[in-house]
Image (cartoon, rainbow, N blue to C red; front, side, top):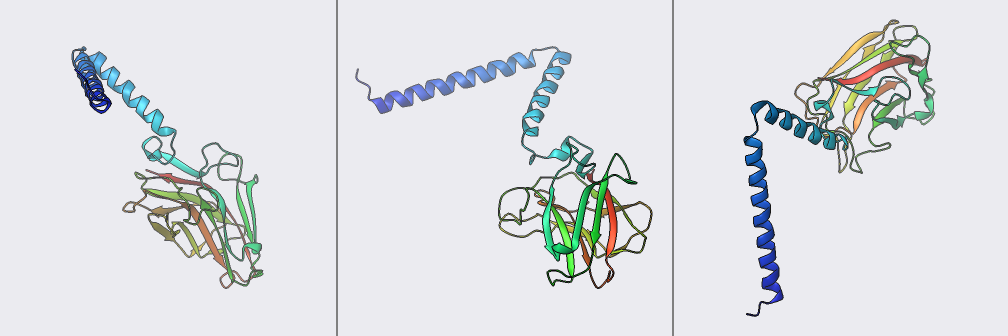
Length: 237
């Protein structure tokens, strides 16, 4: 009996699919037949394998695997995320050092920012966004899915105390691939000693976070400029 190539292909596909289903059912039956202890161990191994595969893609729920998702912990720390690439306003008025080693809150280093308030670009304000990837203003796919985080915390202090930061924030970048939320605190008058600050994210959509952290200062609030420090920036459960 003559069978056309098209029919032959369909017959082969059906046979392959049937074999696949038979194999899957057989494997599931074998799993169910295992003693309870061995079955649970196998299920744990399968779960671990799945998490390791997902870990290769940083956009897949990293908060499911960590208690803290760092923006900055120490200079060059392998668990840092986001890049301080989004310089805004009078960017020429900012001097930025992420390896300042004097009196860091924890570990070896902290971030030191000097704001001169000279209005070099004529804006009257300046700020920096930590972005993923670098220089992402919502025009390319990026960011992290930080679903599960409840807050963004960090430590900050002023050189002399009284320095005014207009805003500390996360999110808020627009564009085709925009941030899924925005949250902020401020204005804040810094103290001379390290103090912990918290941005509440309990009810925010964190499925796509491009702007991981941001600060903004203005010349009106700091006419003589300001020097301040930041450390231990992290998303927490």
